[in-house]
Amino acid sequence: MAGPVADDPSLGEGPPRATVYGWAVFALSFGLLISDYMARQVLNAVFPLLKAEWHLNDGELGWLAGVVAVMVGLLTLPLSLAADRWGRVRSLTAMAILWSLATLLCAVAGSYGQMLVGRALVGVGEAAYGSVGIAVVISVFPRRLRATLSAMFLAGGIFGQVLGVAIGAQIAALHGWRTAFMVIGVMGLVLGAAYPLVVREKRIKALSGGGDGEAANAQPKASVRQLVSSRSVRLAYLGNGLQYFAAGALPSWLPSYLFRYYAMPVDKAGRVAAVLLLICGAGMILCGIASDRLSRGDPGRKITLAASFCVGTAISLTLALQLPPGPGQLALLALAMALVGGTGGPAGAMVANLTPLSLHGTAFATMTLVNNLLGLAPGPILTGKIADSIGLLGAFRLLPVPCLLAALAFLAMRSSYKADLAKLTAGS
Image 1 (cartoon, rainbow, N blue to C red):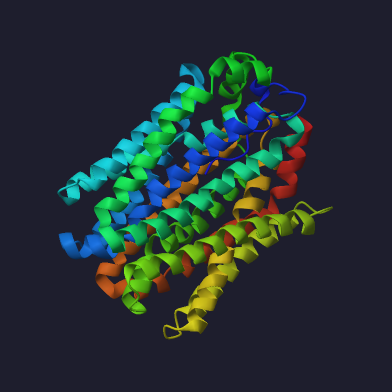
Image 2 (cartoon, rainbow, N blue to C red):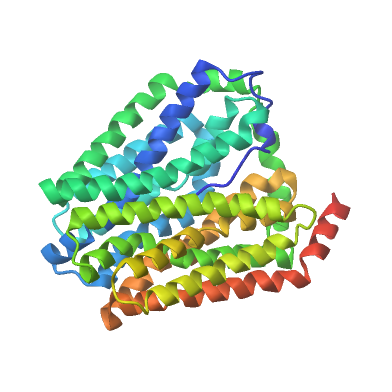
């Protein structure tokens, strides 16, 4: 997920008030973000069907899920920069068409290799949508609404994950997994084709009041070393990336876990997993709010809270996976899902506090890169490979380990955080 870019100086002050056109831009961009995550998550709902039809092992299934995050992590920064030069609207349209066509390719894939190529292309299409899409959205609203619009826009990722799993599972159960990919791919193509008909580059620039962005692009290049210059910011990247190992593995494998250990049919497993994903999204928001409120007057308290979310996830998972399948286990899994993404808020705030204002957009893009390459990509892949050796339950029982390592990384910041904050303040 992309981070806030509300402080990007190239965006200008925006219009004096929200307009009907601005809300139309938001609606289309929000719809495409939902399509983005539906295309990403539909695969997880049909894991059991693919496994049975193509005789795949869990390691191969893990690669189908993780390759999207690999491509996103590798290409977020270069494609975001390319979009600024080529045109954001044109770039977003091309991205949506690419990930939708790639989803249709998955629908007609005749082998595992073809499906893997299709999933990789989904990741290429989605790589920069979050960062570029949010820049378009907030540019057509007043500056005072940018934080609110950022949060609203990013919530589309959660809705997309829920819909991708729930709708994908339902369609797959009734009409087969190929139809699930087909429906979601066509939805993305329709939205992608409509986007440039409504969202116009010139009109966005006129509303935003921003310049051509060249001056904004120049400074981060000269100061990019500051993104990783302090010990504390490096540990913030590391801690959140490690925690996102579990945050990537659980959504990918929960439908399969429910299918195998609860004997749920594919459609029911998808619905239950969708509820757990909703709990994850609500937990991310509530943990962020709690972090802001409890850290007033003491910015360093965010470190303790982030570490607590990691430890809470580890404890909840450990207890849940010692119980037999049933209501008690599901309740503890729900608690783990509520906490597993909770570090995003405090870690994001710490990264913002530890980097210059002019570099916040690039700092969050860097955080996205680390989250994907350290957590969201290897989480599903390694969990699948381990599951081939000791079963999916055994693989799930190892997920508390990266959570505890994440807690240690956050706690290691305590010795340097305030000094690094003071150093940045003095330098600015």
